Structures are given as C-alpha cells and as structure tokens.
Image 1 (tube, rainbow, N blue to C red):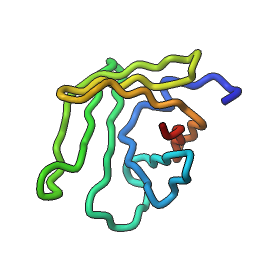
Image 2: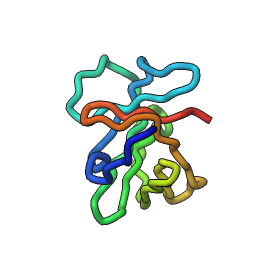
Image 3: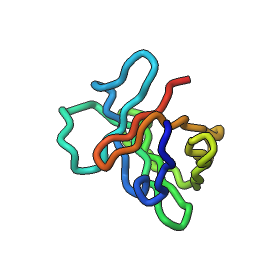
Image 4: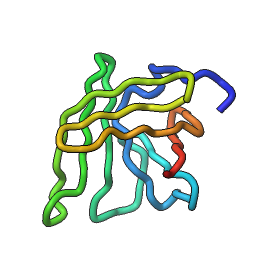
Length: 106
C-alpha cells in the first residue's frame, strides 16, 4: 500500500464479505453496504477512542459480541486488534476505501 492510511477512514462497522475474498485477501464492507444473505458474518466496529467490538459467529449461529481495542500501525500498514478471550490479531492492510477494506490473509 503506497499511500498513508487515514485513521478516520477506518472508523466504522466493517462486515466480512466472504463472497469477495480471494486466496490471498479478505474483503470487508461497511455496515449498510448491500450484501447477500448469510448464516453469519464476522464484523468489527472501530471507534475513535481506540475501543472496538468484534461480532463473531457463536454457538448455534448466534452472534457473540467481544469488547476490545484497536490501533493503527501506519508503518505496516496494519490494524492491531485485541479482544477479550481472543489472541491478538494483526490485519495487514492492502487497501482502504470508503466502501471497501481489503486485508492480507495469513
């Protein structure tokens, strides 16, 4: 990614759009973007104060919310996510647009 990432561009609820994934990348769309029906989508909400919420698929396909925090590492560029009961995750950013967030798998 050649351009610096704007922290402000990341502030929203992002839903995993697995239909658009490739073998190397995961795609997320902002809340409100038209997505086909799904049994469940992992999502995360990034807020200005550094807090975050992840909504994961829990038992019986019931969404489970986890509280946590996030930070942007502009050098990576990457997003570091820490949620209760979960190992830390680092999402390597490929592209950040108003209606599309792409991260590298792995």
